[in-house]
Length: 463
Image (tube, rainbow, N blue to C red; front, top):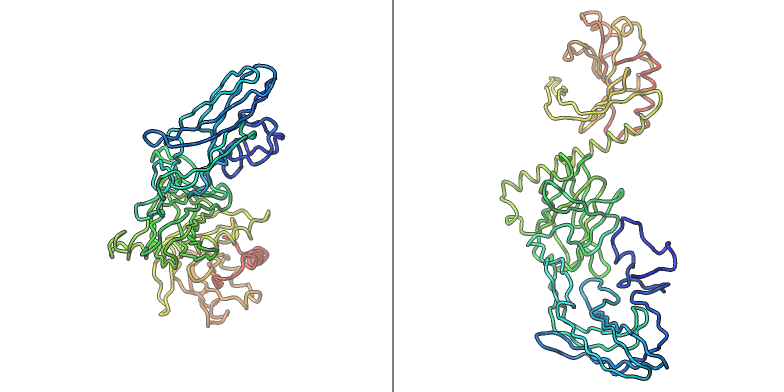
């Protein structure tokens, strides 16, 4: 166990990332109060003649001579550590691979041996989901604690050269090489882990990926609150290429994952892949391939259409959120939802009923705000007599239509007519209430909608 000098050196209680937080003796690079392996003795010991040589069946044999240099007998715990010098991922600064407790009389010298099994040098290769021993130089250290290293030697260990990550085989999101503001959660339904942001946004990093020949990335993702963004970046030698961005549509819960296709044209044959997740996005896995290998042309056409729809509806949701924020005022009570029974007037003047859903914000008592793909409409009503006596001077600069509250298709007023013509049409109809639909461009600011709703309120409009 490592005892730190201050509690400020400890991470959050639920943050278990020992690499990023530089904790435990394996990654701690500070000066501990009591380091791992620390012990006290009246005796003192010297180390010499440290060697590490090949043993049987791939193992290594470490030999070291320990001398009691004091005038009293005592015990010494001889500790053996190692560190790989070149590695695919961050490896421990030092890792214990053996120890021996010995008793030496005053002035006594003894040579001890410790066998290092090959498996002790292995690490879990997340890119292939198996243990591997990397080929290269390894430094072995011997001493009285993790901080009290007396002698070190370096030797070459034969092993594997870890290949680039093969994305065509599929990669689970939790097999990342690095992360920022991201957390791992468990799905009881799927009995596996997935990744999601721990804050507003998070990122996963997959190092040394082979992107050569890739045309499509398949991302298995969900978004349990509303449509959110996934952005994929390729990073190589200080250069960054944005491979693409897609919208993850709302799903029925965190573990209701959907497969989404992102066309890519990577500039690098090998690069680190950075996937940025926003908001309520969860990522289960990624896979790369040719366009035809991941799906049929017909399915790709459908997927392309879905991505376009996702993008369009994400735009609607962002506008809905903007207007809701602007209308959050103590004078208004809001209800927000989706509506698919609306009518649309074509260029020929004819009405048609639309079946696709659009967001609607109900400002209780005053109006409805409908968010269409190309415009924003604010609907309100006036009593028949109030409409006939009202001058409409304050709405002279606004585009609007009037219709029957009972018969929505009763066209009482539209652009190009006069207010007097509208009143004549109202007198000629049997409607007791007159509906009005005020039209704004889609890029109207939420603040302008707020001011307009206040105007409707002052002028006696209701809904």
